[in-house]
Amino acid sequence: MSDDAGLFAAGDAGPGPEEGAAPPPVDPSAPLAVRMRPRTLDEVVGQQHLLRANSPLRRLVEGRGGSSVILYGPPGTGKTTLANLVATSSGRHFVALSALSAGVKDVRAVIEDARTRQIHGRRTVLFIDEVHRFSKSQQDALLAAVENGIVLLVAATTENPHFSVIAPLLSRSLIAELQGLDQAGVATVIRRAVADERGYAGALEVTDAAVEDIVRLSGGDARRSLTILEAAAGAAEDDVVTPETVELSLDAAPVRYDRDGDQ
Image 1 (tube, rainbow, N blue to C red):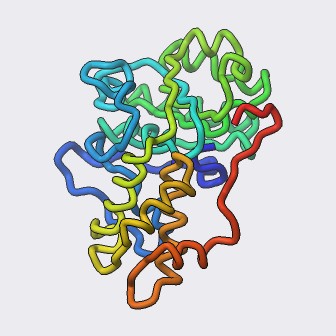
Image 2 (spheres, rainbow, N blue to C red):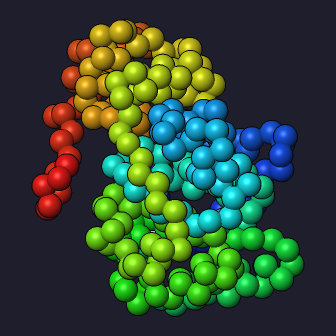
């Protein structure tokens, strides 16, 4: 789903599928959270306050909008998922940079490639994970490209962008605040992974009590819930996950801390 800190480096995820085309095959060796990443808006759990009919973010994902967007919210709420959906909605070219490793040179190289691609009628979606880690000079390097539509910027951050993103970039972007999933939403994510062919295809049984434990431990983080489920499945006897299995698979319940104390 930072939303997927370290998962993306500078590179090209390639064009999205054409409308109506079959989804790309899923690598069975990939982590469960990667295999279960939503492929369409209909598969997204939560964030309905942002994805209601004709909302700016829904129009953007559906390829009917052109504004850059900053996705702000806690881990595991779907920031990377929405970035991927924006890219694949109309076959846009998708490039992802991680602010942990990319510099001004990388940003300028992406922009030059995007400028060339625009001449041939194809727009580029630039996804920047952990955008709050970009320096002012790195953010400044984006301004003209965002202003002129050379790139459609989709940036993700776990920190309030009003304090971590420069004002000129904020003024050129929509800001969408994602919320942690409620208990029902996390339970839906878990049960879908148990039933879906990308997950366990019904071959794994998870008791209601175990689902409740995973929901409690995940703290509204969908990716965390799937990580716990995958660990528990590996420890399960006779393909049945119980609360005891969940407990055995974890050293301690995950607790999120940050230096500012607001999580």
